Image (cartoon, rainbow, N blue to C red; front, side, top):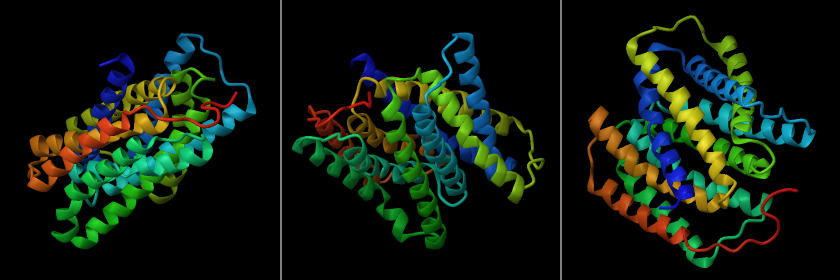
Length: 297
């Protein structure tokens, strides 16, 4: 496994841990307050490292525009959707549905980045998405259907936000250091979350339990700061659609985490969906064709 692939796989493992960690700490803090704290803490870590390394502060308005778009998409919409979804659906199921995101990102990448996938890779994306559908099917027909629908709606909101953020970050991946880019977009995206939390919640209603501290630190330092830094580093070397294909690994990890820590059952649907997702990832690793510039000059 080459270094770029290793980075992406590590990112997927870190991201797969996010819903379980959110679920762990969700009862101890208001949703948006929790989300804002995660973003602010992660941005503080990354920007501290950037300042220590004396990385340049972005100067061009174009860079700030794309950072703002990335922050609003990945952090504001993404976290709003994730933290509310965790209230309605189990973490393993949430990670499965989240993996509609690569298809959304591939569509955006086609129009914004002029990235084209070969026929084999497009088939891989469809097979991977089919794996997600197969794994999720039992959740759509059983249990509390109303809560499931609400959870899926919030997850799709998060997926759309992350798709927008990924395309924005890809536009500037070669023009700004990953640590700086991720730190600024998190800080920018946290601002609306802070405003929404102050207007709709009691930010002081936090129980500083060991579970909450473990959840907040795990989410901020590992699931966010480290994961986003590795992600942008990978995007400097790989097409967005190809890197995103590894997102289909997250359901397997999410199923495993859900079974180990939350007692979620491992069903034949889940295993079948996982197998299809692996096939999809391998197909998308086929060499993609690119029309037009990969990065903005």
